[in-house]
Length: 290
Image (cartoon, helix red, strand yellow):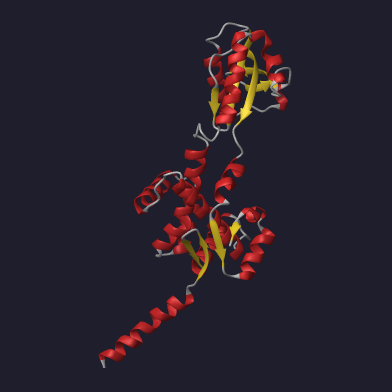
């Protein structure tokens, strides 16, 4: 009798297992139809009308590719790391109501929450903010360009614009103000609304350039989140500072990302879903489909 009870008791489990199938693999990471369903519902929370399966699949592929690139660069992505990320988001989220709606998608299924939401958030955040933007190696060509411009203009500050032009760089004259932010010199303030972030940037630049005599070049390359800056002090006008500035953007993230991500094999077993992905998602052409 107990033997039959065991078989009957196992039936719901077998049925559940049968309903879950692996639709895709990103490297060694499987993506199931249930993962896609959960992720599509998460997308709907953020972007109403976007909760389609191909959207869920696209977000999971991009997230797991980000994770694979992270791992290839020596970063560990394990349960402890993801739990720490969940704690960080719980404590610092700017949109607790949205986070709660995301959690409601998963109900009590914490494993699915960690796999299809937290894992993706962590991989994409760390890869961009903590690896890409902060890596001297990734942006060494751009930094080298800024450094060469600095060295040459330190020797001949009056040739700042001429040297920049010879390197096909645009020098721009700016007015820096602790009150009004940063605007192109000669432009009217009405065309360039001030912002707290702009005032903060102006304060940093003024702090640096005030150490230099008029006509001199600030002796360091300034690094910003998205680029490098070389600057020459022209003069003061009242409380404002007038400078010539050259900005060199850092590498394009997408180009760098796909250089690495396109080497990772991706297998999609659902032909209809694969065709939808290729048709609707612009970056899908970069995926190394097997």
